Image 1 (cartoon, helix red, strand yellow):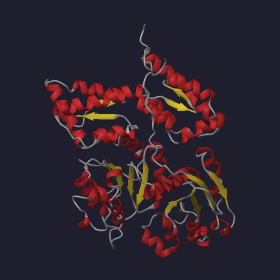
Image 2 (cartoon, one colour):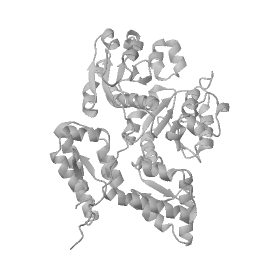
Image 3 (tube, helix red, strand yellow):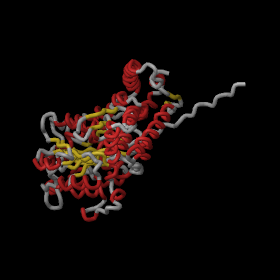
Image 4 (cartoon, one colour):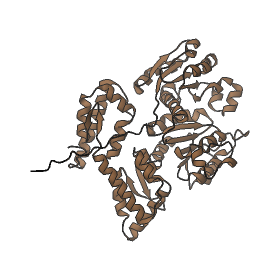
Length: 487
């Protein structure tokens, strides 16, 4: 008699969801027609939200939401609405000011509040105009910023991944955020602070530098969650509204969190002092934001994993976990090349670059295991290979379930999409579940293409199916025997 084979063990796929609480209602109270017309944009790009346009301050003040909400007001409306009542009636409410006032656009909080006291009622302040900060361009990032603020401040039970922006002028980050959100998708949050004291409080949980505890600082603030710092040089510190506090902040980051890549968003020559340890982004220069996109993709763990030598020359551009294993195998042995490569990889491990890349590509549990190890030499290579190979084997037996039916490869995923309930698909798409699963299966290019796709019903299914079908063919041509593509 033949022994009956045991069923193949399956592992459960648990997606990494950055924001467990999503904005359910967007309420707009504004006389500006451009702001009011953003309702259509939000309903298309964020189909999980309900958008209400209100016409009087009483309705705005008495609004009750069934879930998390953001109330978007212009300068006039902010003077009219009782925002305290809104907060009392709605536990998870974020108040956003979309200001058309030039002084508010280019002033630190204290100056704006002195001239226009109503700005103090806003949790977030954004600048809008008819050109680079037109409402239709920035509205998605306004809502997403509110969602990030809510989740960071109230729902931080799991490790987060945060881009910290330090700049006192709303006109700049209002222009910049749509680009940054387009890059990071659902993989990280953005937190904005506008003074040196706010930065200290967020990073270290203290009001003054002298209060930073060298033994407890990682558990006192959110610094350990920050994956990138983007800072101006000049912003308020104490009573000095135009201090060069950015220099002090960068020095603190280099001392306590040297793993955090730093981008200096400033044209000042004072940024030159950090040219060897930070990336300079001249504000307003043509092409600067395109350059920024490339830097963020390459050095914050979001894009490929770059391995560079001591001269900064690119040695490897790694797309997925399988390619990391291949590089590790080249670092084995006692050849001159292997020893040199091991030394480079040790530096990446020491700065938590490997674990950060794993976090950004949905390997949260694996990142948590590897992050505290800080091993060296052959031992480092052996341990990394063991864990990474184990993850590859695990993902081979980790299907994606859609409405109680499973897909183990791209072809099966495509088949399931075509017959699935659109509402089930939308939930998975909204939370970046498809991209997270594909990232962990090694299909990083397809994962990137799916991340910005948001829609409803059959249109969503058609968009997802079209992208997957294209990449099924491309991956099959590249590796015809890959069972993760075709069973």
